[in-house]
Length: 289
Image (cartoon, rainbow, N blue to C red):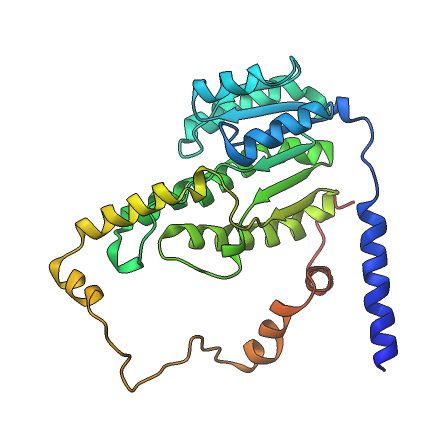
């Protein structure tokens, strides 16, 4: 029994190794649109893909960021100003992309734009603090993706969403972890839906790299600002050292046999296996490939 299981695991790893060794051809004919290219991952990715010969369409929040990127790349790379929290800005950028890719479609969409503050214990924050992050990291990502989806489908391309390890385990209060959990859920459902049309969806889940998003100075300042706004009662509570009461609730409750015997085990299964189970139960679109 164990020998068969080990053989199956080895076969899965061998198949994954083979798939990941494949190289994409005709890179100079392929367009990739990247958000959040002023700095950090987006900036580095735009430069790297430009070096590899792809036609990079880089979205920056500021003209200063766009100028700095153009100064470090070839003439192939083009930039556009994009604020992912504004529908009119997304619409204008979508039209700009359409004019450039034409009938070829958009081979790659990389949703990288994101912010991490305000961050603090949840009780110190307001609804506006949460929405500030969700508007960029989740709702902005959703709207950009939906706006460009037809172009990605035309090219049978791929969508790459930058999530985070905190989209798997929540480590801090505020909207950041919530937004990344949302990105994970959206990406899972989108991957299954678009697979029928030859479109791939991938998640990037970085740890704590040194970028503007993880700047200790900015995070410390945001926590201090939140602390300064909270009520004296909350300050008094959080300023005291206290022990938990005698009542110890569970961290999670999962009522229902379906949750205990199906959905919770599914959450620990390999993604490809969960996808296969979902495909088996789901209807196929008429024009699925």
